[in-house]
Amino acid sequence: QKEVEQDPGPLSVPEGAIVSLNCTYSNSAFQYFMWYRQYSRKGPELLMYTYSSGNKEDGRFTAQVDKSSKYISLFIRDSQPSDSATYLCAMTGPGTYKYIFGTGTRLKVLA
Amino acid sequence: GAVVSQHPSWVICKSGTSVKIECRSLDFQATTMFWYRQFPKQSLMLMATSNEGSKATYEQGVEKDKFLINHASLTLSTLTVTSAHPEDSSFYICSARDGRPRGADEQYFGPGTRLTVT
Image (cartoon, rainbow over all chains, first blue to last red; front, side, top):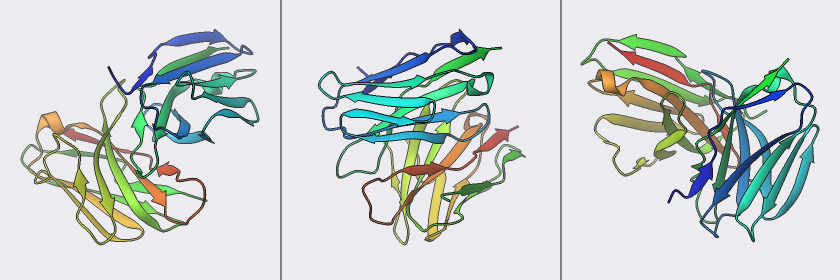
C-alpha cells in the first residue's frame, strides 16, 4: 500500500463547476499537508498549506484535512480553464523535511 | 518572494557525457534543497536531500556516484548526472526549504530541467 493515494484522473469538468480533489494516506504521523499545482513541463507551485486538521480558504481554493479519516481534500470553486493542470497533494510529519507526494490528479476545465 | 530558479531549463546531451544542473534560491537562504525526478504523467520521486556544507542524503535506489550533488552555498545546489544514458532522460526538479524558523516548512520548487540523452 502506498503511503499516499491519489486518483490520477483525468478529471474533466465544465467551466464554473466546483472541483473536489482528494488524497488518502496511511501514516498517522503526518501533520503538514500541501497542495501543489503543476502545469505541463513546469515545476509545482504551492497552492495551499495546512497544519493538522481543519479547513483553510484562499480565494477560490479551500483545503480540508480530516486526520481521523486520514483524508485531505482540495476544493476549487468557479473553476476556470486556467485551472487545468495536475494537482499534487504532499504531506510530511514532524522531525523530517521529506515530503511524500501523491501521484497527482490531472484536471481539465472545459470552456 | 520564495523564488527558486533552475538552469538550464532543458538540455540535450550525448550518451556518456555529464550534465550539470543548477538550482538557486533567489530571495531566501535555503538550508536544505531537494532533488526530484519526474517521469511523464507520474509524480515526483525524491532522489536526494542536500544540506549546505554537508554530504547529500540519497534515497534508496539512487546511485550517489551517478548523481553527484553539491550544496556549496545557502543559495546554490548542483546536480551532476555523470555518464548519462538514455534511461536518465527525465524531468529533474529541485526544491528549496526556507530555513527561517516559523511554523511552516514549505518547499518551493524550481521550474524544472528537462534532460534528454541521445
